[in-house]
Image 1 (cartoon, rainbow, N blue to C red):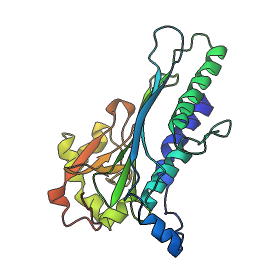
Image 2 (image 1 turned 45 degrees about the vertical axis):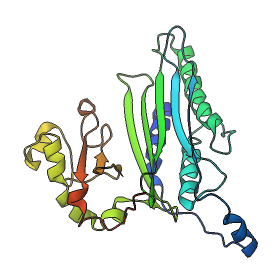
Image 3 (image 1 turned 30 degrees about the vertical axis):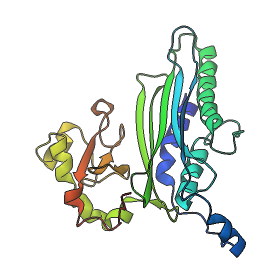
Image 4 (image 1 turned 90 degrees about the vertical axis):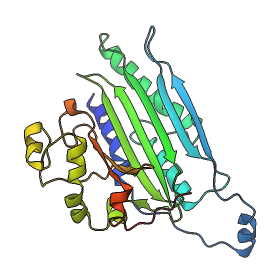
Length: 271
């Protein structure tokens, strides 16, 4: 079980550890002429796979996914695919046999989880059947950034299951993974600006009540690096145990664009 917990933690932590872009390669004149006739961007490929688990009428393991095809990609699209590939190849007993992002990569990930369950089932015949539902989606609403959104619900023994939600934002042109400071500049100043939205949307009267209600911010309120841009504003999502006990779920809050106009230092170009 310790091994599986480590697997899940590594799986979730991977997104927050990404940084930098890819090395740019200079093209020859002949190559430039070739790229001129290619499409403006790669197309999104979407699908889902299922893998059966357990005996009887148990819901299958599911993975709903999106990724970019490989006909032509911007640096950002290359980075998104690279993140997905490395993410799903992390912490495996055996090296992944899949070397590119495709349906088999997602199926392989579910199969690995099922095989782990069958191993534990052999050790404890009373082990409850595990479940796992994953999704990877790519938001392309803004031409300047790509938003990779990973969500999961699962159970792998223990007192209860888990939920996870993780985002990675990538500059479409350079392939750089973007952090909060890339969008707001002075993060400390932004952390002083944001609490009123968190408090109002979570029905809390003041910051003084946070500790009393079960939230923990050791050094004062901090915005999470787990954020994305909706069509209305900037959404922050705290995962289970990040700022509060399990029973409090996944706290979120959103700052409307009208209030962000003087705060954002990164230009979001809508399509």
